[in-house]
Length: 443
Ligand code: ASP
Image 1 (tube, rainbow, N blue to C red):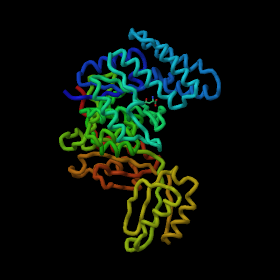
Image 2 (spheres, rainbow, N blue to C red):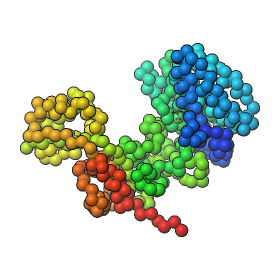
Image 3 (spheres, rainbow, N blue to C red):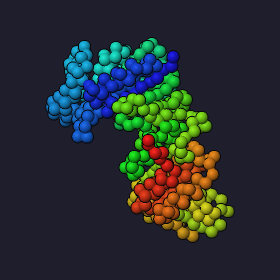
Image 4 (cartoon, rainbow, N blue to C red):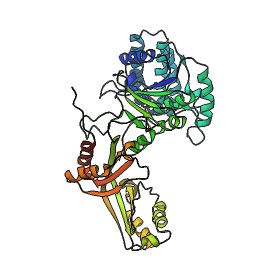
């Protein structure tokens, strides 16, 4: 028998009906022995997340004002879930204690974490599973970063003592013994940490979509779902803007060799997206895995005849950037030219200074900054082994009348990055998608 750790996001636990779906999913597979719940999320587009209501309570408490309104809304949400699920627990005593602590000044992190805490209390009651408070097993260091080693040891030991456990997401304990939260969306991270500590065979991340899509649905209509993606590919895609999991949720499971499965609570029969290691065993239907990108980059173009023979030239260009505290994204270079791609935001208000400094340090023939660049990454583990991929990609862009301003194949061989004008971004993504993803007729 294996162990699956199942994390459920806020929309999966937004109300009693969603709680029931979660319970059915958990009980339908004996391997699902540990669950990591989020706080109840939005029930509709205009609804407010419980976490945001808790932040509001804390702000009011700090201002010495009454928190009756947001706290009343929180209490009603949890009561209606408990009522409909016919739970046998004294919810008011939990709520009163939480309110008392916020009023006493327990702080923002404590308040924000209570959505997950109460979700966990209800779920543990509903399933009859043990409640494990992450305050006793997930630790942050002095600098506020996760203390991975301590967490792994302590949490690993705790989880071994429970056949079934509910571990609320989003928070742990700081070095003073106080509750500390991860950044927003951090229950994904808890799920990954718990999966690693439990030596799970699979980390299931249940949400309201059936996995990762091959392209942004706001740009490409009805894009295909990615069935299998490697952690390396996912890193490239999320770096380029594809929003999948919280960034820090990849690391713990990746180093532990645990695959992640993104699933849909509302469509539990769909396989979702599996994220794993092996590239070869999972042939993908298409030669590419996904397309991601975003706008608003700038290129710093430095030209100098015989640059290739000049020792330390690249270092001096980068020194100028470092002095201005500008980090760069890509650096495609030629014999006499060096291009450094940076975020537009990173150089705002610093352009003149930067050019002047590059001139002083490198004495180039020309140095110019071009703005309004969008970058698009076409990612696919199958690209290395297939011929004609670049030809297909550039042909599609030419046919769509798009001028390519930059090309970077990257060293990962997983990725072809093209730079186009901001204005051409959406058309370019659609052209690349059409070139590689031929939908099978659905009949
Ligand atoms: N409830 C937290 C938030 O809204 C954490 C999470 O849902 O992952 O950010």
